Figure 1 (cartoon, one colour):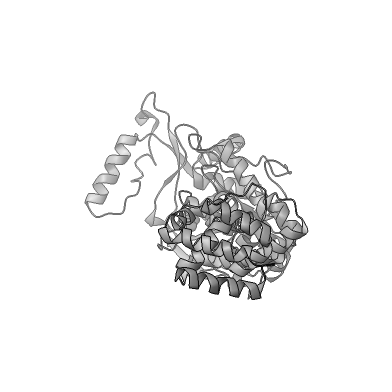
Figure 2 (cartoon, helix red, strand yellow):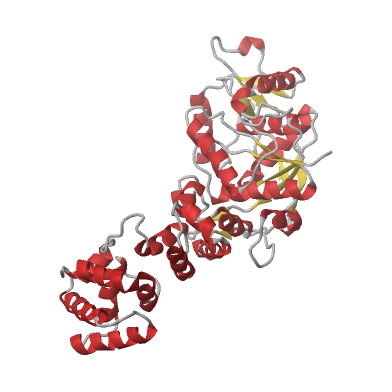
Length: 465
């Protein structure tokens, strides 16, 4: 059968780096094997699911270049691709299990279940259902109570060959009978995902190892329903630098946030691909990643998302783009002077936002403001700064051009006039000319701005006429 993988996010928040890795690895496997990549939306959490988050998922995946062969917006013969549109299928399969005696109605109240759990924990026993309703007779059915449906777990070891962890064995006694349909008619996660994977013909599932403990339950359901389970590969979760797994609340690691901060999709993909996989050195495109992808080479150890790695790849991504592409990303109209400035500042930029900030002093879009940062404003407020600017202005007005030779002469003249050196000498000049406290070499700033603009900005920053 043709390989089929899926990415099944819940639209209850924005995608983060961990989600992106799961999507990427499934996409790479599908492309490596010539299979299909399916996007499925798990939106049965009615209260938390949002159309806004669903749209954000589509947008983020497309931004990364991870297109899907089937999904809610593209359709396909295995649909529908939203769980909220598959409720009738879940009920039909649950009824089938009840009829064959593999599942049963459970009339236990929430209060009873909470009390059972509490007493088991107090006794030091792992909480699990006590099977009270397994053999309930018609005479014992409470009146007016809507039942849930529980799967009758057989007493057996459940084993499977995990693509990452190897042979894994669970004793079914550790979890007991579990709910597959709630009293409200909603399918549980484990039941819905099994129904979806089975009915959509999913052959391979790559997901986080937080789902490892769900797998024996799901395998029992596949077997009881008469479906062949897919091949499972559980990858360790992605951790933040605090060694805590990334989640939807980690806004700084969300794809939306990274995109807004000026990171490029190529950089995100290269950074994410190295979280538990070693495709080798160098900057790789998606096609090359797909050619190299091998589940057998995925790590069993957790990976830490290091922002410095992302920054390194983003610098590489920026350097690989043409001036026209970069100006397009920044929304700027290029001219020859601005192209020269771009080449000068590009090595100093980590993100597109930083690139635009560094380029801002050399463009009138938006109109340049000499003091544009708090740090620069603070520098120019120092008593010594005005004397430095006054001395530099005098030297610049006396120079025919501002090149390397004249720059050295000018700076020596300012030193003699003010007795300043180091940051107290250079920082006021940079702040006055660029509105920033850091950036490219000051001599390069002078050459890019030209003598007329340098004098104009010095006068404006120093309040001279």
